[in-house]
Amino acid sequence: DRNDKPTTAESGYYFLQSPTVETARPHSNLQIPAKTQNDQPIDILKIRKDFPILSQKVNGKQLVYLDNGASSQKPQQVIDAIANYYKEINANVHRGVHTLSQLATDAFEAARAKIQQHINAKESYEVILTSGTTHSINIVANGFSNMLKVGDEILISALEHHSNIVPWQMLCERTGATLKVIPMNLDGELLMAEFDSLLNPNTKIVAVNHVSNALGTINPIRYIIAEAHKGGAAVLIDGAQSVAHIKPDMQELDCDFYTFSAHKICGPTGTGVLFGKEEWLNKLLPFQGGGEMIKEVTFEKTTYADLPYKFEAGTPNIAGVVGFGAAIDYLNEVGMDAIAQQEEEILKYATAELLKIPELKIWGTAQEKVSVISFNVGNLHPYDIGTILDNSGIAVRTGHHCAQPIMNFCKIPGTVRASFSFYNTIEEVDLLVKAILKAQKMLS
Ligand code: 7TS
Image 1 (tube, helix red, strand yellow):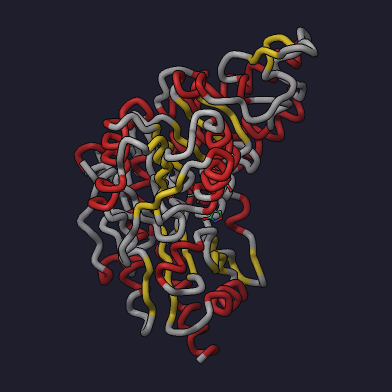
Image 2: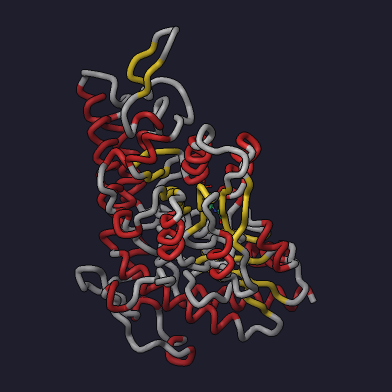
């Protein structure tokens, strides 16, 4: 199965008849009967009220936040969880008999348990709390430093964010291993026949993203994981862009590592996850040395702590992790199925509306994609368009999106990227289209 998007039957999505552009236009998102897992309709207006920043004006205009791929906004529930932690609990974790330290430890470990449950990891100690995806990938790449030799290969893909390229290049420099790349096509899809032929007994690690941040492609990770495992390679999935849209199941996917950041799923910055299978985490070298990651320290020899603490040196981002737990609760309250449904509608509508703009080209037309639309308008520079959109209160990302190899492959300097969340509305898509038309007029 090369398709990782849950089918209607699998996910229990409630699909209203596909809104044609004509029927969808007069409706507000409020009327899209997306359903939660409890089969309750979700109320976008009510959801938007949870996010204080969404009612803000930017440059004198109502904020239209379409840069969710870079970082999502935070609901009051998450902000409160962080503030309450500092107001009522604040202490260091795992190191005090005093009451506050125990409460802080309980809150921290409760968040780990929530994350474990959310991603269906077998054990809570397979959930390492890190500062984010970048940190998580670096832990793994560093951890392999004494396991690779000249002749070994690391296989990544043409669709990777720099965070899933550079740490592997650094590992290759340290060990003499070779980096290989699964190529892509102009639709933004990986060439799976090439993947099949690149895999060989020297392939020790396969590291690909679940979803491309620049183009929105959902990669066929089930197939990649299964094929890589046949030859004994370890598989790391960079889930930074998927977790906002798809609830990943560690036991079902059977990947060896899965990484993501809290800040892209309504949680705070500065915290994230490295999921690793117990047997692999035990094999990896620790990344950072320091307090909390040790069993015993003498000047002659130090022994390391058991999982997960072996990879959690120093005082962690305790308040951030507590906020992360609150973000997981929030997403589950809205319902991941309802979120996927809502975003699918927005993606369909926005794609159709944007394509009506003369000379607008969408980069990333994979069969399976999330609610990310990367585009250019004629020869206009993405920064110029981004600046005019910003003047209209619309936040998008412009540039190479930390995925320069994709831009090189497409022979473009960059794109404008609108990345939609479940709290975005049809009206906001209309405002985006209007502002692009205005930019086109001003710049031509
Ligand atoms: N991997 C992918 C696929 C990403 O999209 C990102 C961040 C990262 C790794 C790194 O995550 P971090 O939390 O450690 O920074 N992507 C983006 C983006 O698309 N726009 O800004 C950050």
